[in-house]
Image (cartoon, rainbow, N blue to C red; front, side, top):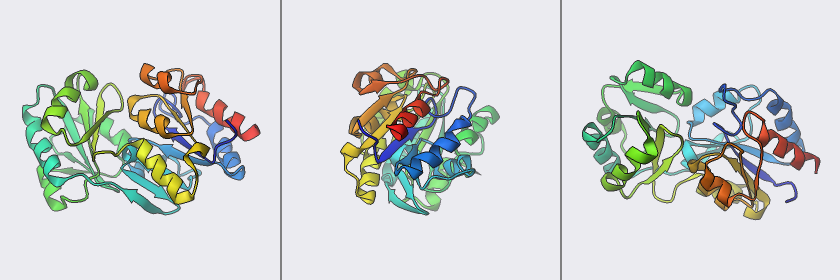
Length: 268
């Protein structure tokens, strides 16, 4: 395709390399993309505050956060998709008897909550993705403070999230959209909410046709984003389901495959 006007760019496994860092070459590429009229929209399961911190060196105009439940553009949240409070309460109550060990993160548009008894090693993992996090006595207490603005519940599953947690969640909260974002993480959002919906909302906000968008990703939480985009790019290290729907497959994240693709768009 010719250069897209919007590129929705996944973070972990896509832009971020296996050492957990954004490649140095990205910063110059970001500035050149903006000069070329291409909006680079980091799209992640991470919260908005974490993305803003990660990109504080040269902040883009746009972020797709919380796997599409929050879209931020030019200083304001332009789209937010809250969960039904009853479903969140049911999940928080049932987790203690789940047939697997999991630790929940209750996500609001600009802050998150974990339970005070979250093991330190798991809390350290949470802190990678949720910079603005508060430890509450329990998730039910955090939910009771403001039950109407939860946008996501993220679960860190100690075993395999797709194998062990996904079927159980389909029984407990079938009305929620469960998306597997890595081997250990699974996110629950409102029905119909995903990175693909967020990309459509962003395109509508900017007056851009979906045919003039592109998406680059590596895991199942990127599936809807690639499916909606005008041009779908799967990483070399992507889940097989993403490669199956991609218009092209590029190098791995450690090979900076996403940067190479954006470079070709800029110079095309």
